[in-house]
Amino acid sequence: MREFPSFTTHLECSATGARYPADVLHGLSRAGKPLLVRYDLEAMRRAISRDEFARRMEGGFWRYRELLPVRRSANVVSLGEVATPIIPAPAIARLHGARELLVKDEGRLPTGSFKARGLALAVSMAKELGVRRMAMPTNGNAGAALAAYASRADIESWVFCPEDTPEINVREMAHAGAHVFLVNGLINDCGRLVAEGKATMGWFDASTLKEPYRIEGKKTMGIELAEQLGWRLPDVIFYPTGGGTGLIGMWKAFAELEALGFIDSGRPRMVAVQAAGCAPVVRAWQEGREHAEPWSNAHTIAAGIRVPAAIGDFLILRAIRASGGFAIAVEDEAIAEARAEMARIEGLLLCPEGAATYAAWRVALASGRVSPHERSLLFNCATGLKYPLPAAGRKIDCRRPVDFASLAVAAN
Ligand SMILES: Cc1ncc(COP(=O)(O)O)c(C=O)c1O
Image (tube, rainbow, N blue to C red; front, side, top):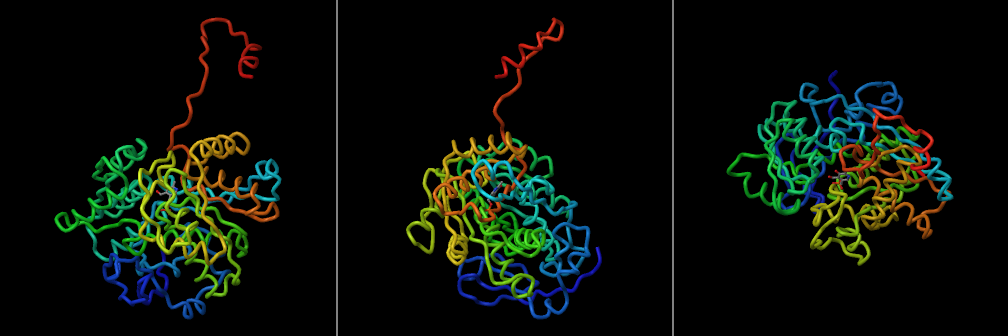
């Protein structure tokens, strides 16, 4: 990969605006809030253009290198990232009387989820800054991405997940070389263990938003979708929200793209989708609060959005409000049903979190919060293949004559 100019100027506390130097290792700000990477956007504006991005055919989100914090190409840790497709769902749109519905399918990335974006950046920056051991709490996909990218970079990874994390994720993490621990609690309990153990174990804490670079990786979803849609953003974006890094990251991307003159000041309405069994952001949005109270007894089949308390809650809520969007919760039954409907009608196998966005879109459309003339985009954040599916298949005895006509009858 060739050397690109670097435009990072400093890091900034997302709550107080205090400045922090780039090129040194950081966790949270002194105020205990996430740090955001800032760039010299004026200089970047003179150096790059939309056409220049268009000319770069390869490299997935690394095509936007100037907008990313890695300084040296040698530190880029890559597993063959791709630009994920935006797939129209015309039959589903018709079924619900809408003009258009789009699905951005993040399941095509290495390790099968959008966590590859964040962890590619976090691990590349860890390599650049000399980290040898990383640890994080995870609901599955983030840990799998950390394990893969860290192994690729010859960095140790330690992951702590709730004991009911999907089995495939647990095995995937271990297979990719991580030290994996199953914890009899939720992701925030796992996060506490990482925080408590890091001094003794020499871990760099790579928890969502507790290090500044995962968000820069997730930001590329916003850049990529803008470019794919001809630099015209959709009217509404439905995002399955756990820690909220993707939603916050896309919101940051849109501001940077506007400063570069790549897009105008129009913004999509950002919709945070949560499960009814764990909806702290929805509750805070409904109550008009700046922060979300932790959710007790969190439960949902959509493991990735089972996050009872998010450190970036105020950033999620700000982005939703500034965009004129909203937060919405859907029941697990609606998620499972939406997942089946999308697969049956469009052939798209969503993950449960992705299916939650489709379930939410249906409700929002029916209630008039989204108009049938608007262009909505759903995020499917992981391949559906990582999650359990209902049992299927009928047995046939191939040693006996088969009454084929009866197969169709029995199927109906
Ligand atoms: C498939 C999937 N969707 C959504 C999320 C939530 O992502 P975020 O932390 O950006 O809110 C996760 C997080 O684990 C996930 O794995």
